[in-house]
Length: 183
Image (cartoon, rainbow, N blue to C red; front, side, top):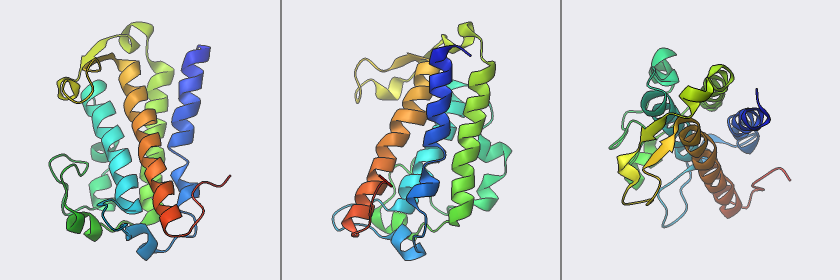
């Protein structure tokens, strides 16, 4: 691996392992708690993060089966309601509040997504990594980001988007009076 590829692989490993620390010793009620005026919960933020990274990176960017589909995660992480996407966009506060996942299984899924993406990164050619991917749904929301290389898109969805939502997890913990990050 090049130094840049190795840096990305290390970030993928971290961001797909980190939720394990964030939810340690939390109760199911704490994981489902939703702050007043906000729809999200820790359960939802973590589930959404890794389902989105999986669907967008594997299905859209890499054009291969998702970890969710190939690993039978639907049976292990059942979600009766998924919203407008497979990863919960458009769910109401009430629907999000009903999501209840087995925490060790949810963490195992996050790690499996990270391992799959790290494996791809270790075997991808420079040509394939540099191929452009169209992301037309970003055109109006994130001008200038409606086209990225494969490696840029994987970084965007599996590191940037992940960090954003794990920040939400830390915020929700803080609103409950708990320590967010371990530092």
